[in-house]
Length: 210
Image (tube, rainbow, N blue to C red; front, side, top):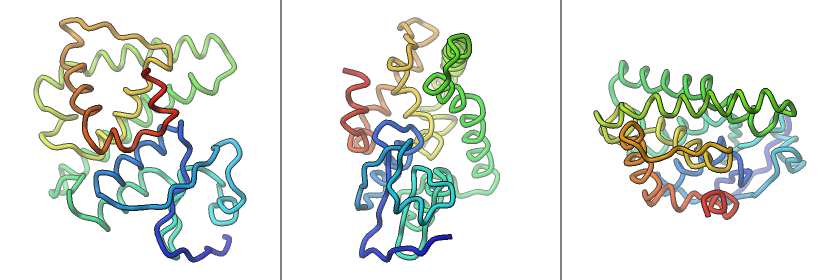
């Protein structure tokens, strides 16, 4: 473990195109937390990241002597350190359910996004695109029940889901407005217009939907 360089403010090492980094930036904006943003490349992170993070990975958050380097850990830390507005439910059962939703997004969707972006196999990419498109359409009806993902309030689950939905066009996934997809489009419009989401977008991410 490297020695942490003490900083006077919170520092966030982020990749402007990484959906894992994007989710943390949304949380920072939701909380109104000011952090020094160090734009980095996940494939070639700064040497400082390698010194303080054993995996030399992004995102990496430095808060005084504390170094965190896994997006879910970072998000929950920020939610606990800056409790208003809360981004996880208060009650243990609901909190556990939210964590399980995030786990499923990671297992079912984030891995597909990573395959589309990183795989050299055309067949693997085509299969991942198909599965992701079908998965997104399959959840559309739930947004007829609640304004956010299985919740009346915006939560960490939405922070994980929204960056993936934002990237769909750039991933080669075109979802047409239909009766089935209408609740999904309503949800996306609501989340994409949210101030925290807009402010969290990097210039590269803005280009994904221009």
